[in-house]
Image (cartoon, rainbow, N blue to C red; front, side, top):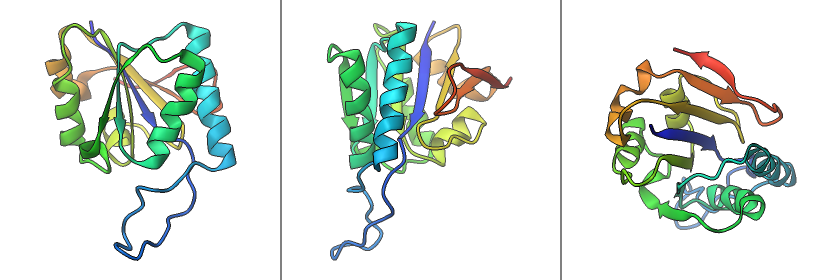
Length: 165
């Protein structure tokens, strides 16, 4: 039974203007508040004893820093896959990445971006918010994500709350 955690990166600095590409914001760092929020999420995972089998992370600076703060709390014994294609990906591409997870893993943490994560979870995910679901079947069944019962944890909440069914 797959367990999926979708985490929107923590609060990042305002977009930078890069000489080579004005639209490029991959290099935005987390704010001080974002670093604290990411640490809180890591603390929450640790307090619940949650250790994802595989971690998928967008290659942006803010998602990498979010993962670093979490891993500081959880340790470094994870299969981590950094993916350039998760950066500002459409929901279909995110779902494709999830469906390709090996059946040897029963849980996954994906750290990425809106709007894709909010669209998949059917809830507005603010920075450092988490959506969770589990389902019978395997990772390829993520295509039925709209049928799943998602739970959402806001960055300051201590528990997962039902989103929709």
